[in-house]
Amino acid sequence: MSVQYDFSNDFVFCHVMQDTDICKEVLEIILAENIAPIKNIISQKSLSHIKGTKAVRLDVVVETQDGKLYDIEMQVVNKYELPKRMRFYQSMLDLSYLQEGDHYKNLRDNYIIFICKFDYFKKNLPVYFFENLCNNDTGIKFNDGTKKIIINTTAFKNTGNKRLQQLLEFIQEGTPSNDLTRRINEMVEISRLHEAAKEFYQLISPYEMDLRDKWKTEGLEEGLAQGIAQGIIEGREQGLAQGHEQGLAQGHAQGLAEGLEKLRNSATNLKRMGLPLEQIAEATGLTLDEVNAL
Image 1 (cartoon, helix red, strand yellow):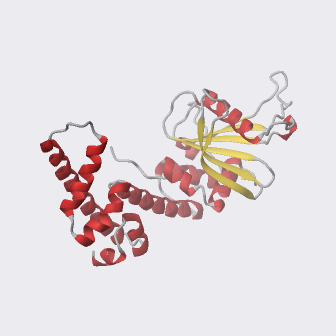
Image 2: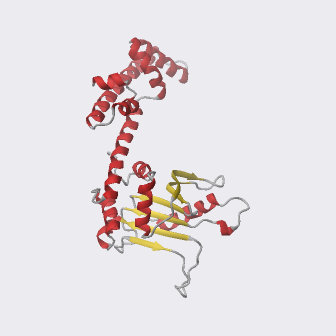
């Protein structure tokens, strides 16, 4: 099944949200309020505090200059454990930013935000906003500095906030309709090209890449195959049949040649898309002359 590299894709989302202006604007639209200037953005932040306990990797953690923390997660599949998951993420974020000996009052205000392409509560609301209140008197706030927000992109038509509607519609449908979503879409396209280039890189192992230039310049296909075969032999049990070793070498050489051909085809496609030749060369490992010749 092919991977969809839209804004809801994990790699693409984390890449796009590294843009400070986009990230700040998305947060302000979701929260319906202005936030302080962004101090730091960390994507794919791994948190693990006690050996043997569950760790977590957060999509995008934003720290603003007033000390507030925002964890923004993109969720495509409903796993039916969102409230408990948000509770865990919040606790891990607290542990991560409270140093040994710190007073509890130094705990940061934090927001756990899940952008979901499904309606978790099935109430057809575009935004579900939660904070701790007194059950006996809902006018009394607990003021623990924590808030949880669940966004339901499927209900983009049910908000009177035009900017929020345009953002949620873009996430759900993929069609940009204002300046922000067009900027996001441009970065999505760049991310898609970067991810495609990364996949092409993975066609050849790092060891093979080290040997590829020598193979191309000296034409030593047989020598390369023998060298790779020798490496395989050293990692295998002794006593492999000679015929099996030769088969491995021939198969590996053929795979390398096919991988190189795929790189050339990929470079041709990226060239047609208008990607700069230097980036194509860097992404595929071909020389600039080779890219020019395609």
